[in-house]
Length: 331
Ligand code: GA4
Image (cartoon, rainbow, N blue to C red; front, side, top):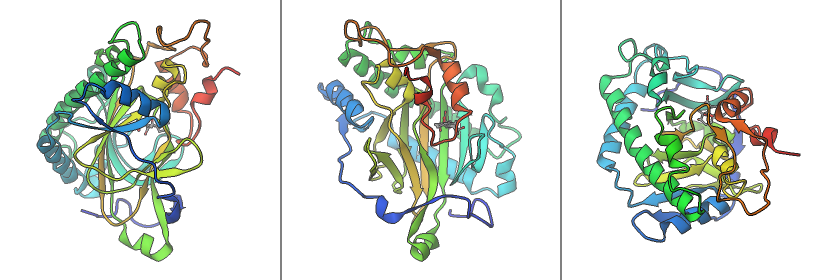
């Protein structure tokens, strides 16, 4: 299960001090989706932290566990088999390399577009180690998670008194929604922490450019979120829930009221971590701009106007840790 993803030198992957991991006791907000007060709690969490987890979500955890083992089967294949599904530009299998600008981490992953019009850019299921079962399960998973994300976005729209409940959810329900799914495998690396007292960076700190991301992981730790200041908060793993991450687009559409949260994954070593992240994005031609109903009278947008295509193109020119939104902030 924990076969090394790439042999040899890992010296160019950043490390961080273990002590930084549990710096501050910040409770992760928990939202019970079946409760009537859910929308208020969601918006509060998105303002304070840009992050929360949901319970009573009605997604079958039995199905999710089966998908997880199917994904692990893929990651257990010999490296040359997996490489047939890569490189991930823009979609496919990647190992250690993240994005096009030199970022690396102790991670291997599959990245797929969920837009049917872009499906041809995903690796073809016949030529690769990706089983048909895995493909089908990923598709089913995306439908279920997208539906849950829409439900949450509708609660946000409602609570913020947007002109319609669908003001946000319509963007990711749209057939042209530019959304994607990423399955990350962080292999165990037991000796490192014991030997050096440092942890390897699995996925370097960043904010997600899309509207909202939904993350599910197995019960291995490693995810950390920024408290908005200089501190990292370790997120205790919970394989029965889904974590929601506010993206840059939602920050802009609420004119800064909801915050996109910086997060990272530290490969702590003890056990392999598997996470599945759905990134809900707008159609490419959609203007990302503060939505009606959210703004106070006379309030001006904090950001220059841009389309999702423009923001995405700009994002792909940045390094993972860059502050991508500041490039569009009005001075
Ligand atoms: C972060 C969120 C998603 O994982 C992702 C990432 C993308 C990639 O891995 O190719 C990016 C990163 C993410 C933001 C800046 C650019 C693009 C790597 C990178 C350096 C799929 C996404 O949409 O943006």
